[in-house]
Image 1 (cartoon, rainbow, N blue to C red):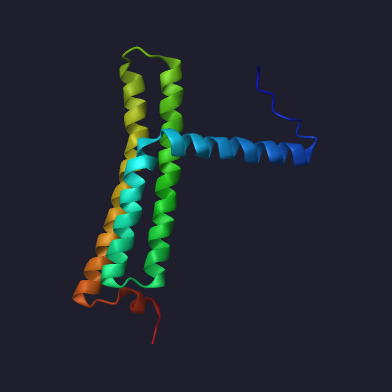
Image 2: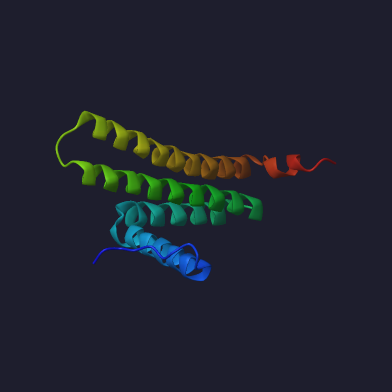
Length: 138
């Protein structure tokens, strides 16, 4: 059966189909992505445990949540690029490998950003440096 997107003239059907398509993409990521199944539980659990141990403030949890969301977005885009590349050719192709490596770099940077933020927050608490207090002028 061929996929047919609803006409943009019918706004509600078009919006509903967009939501359904996005939900399907998220379901595929959760079911098939090893990052969603293995890495993200470790990241979330590690960040939460570190936060509880070091007594993170709400702002730090909010920053970690934001960085995590960016990480999920980059992983989703990376997976889409990899799916498309695999669809184009199954043969060994240096250009395809290079493309996939570049997309993977975005995920790597996002992972490192989450780790760096969590470590910075933990070290600042352990050393008594209240960095968030510096944001508000006295």
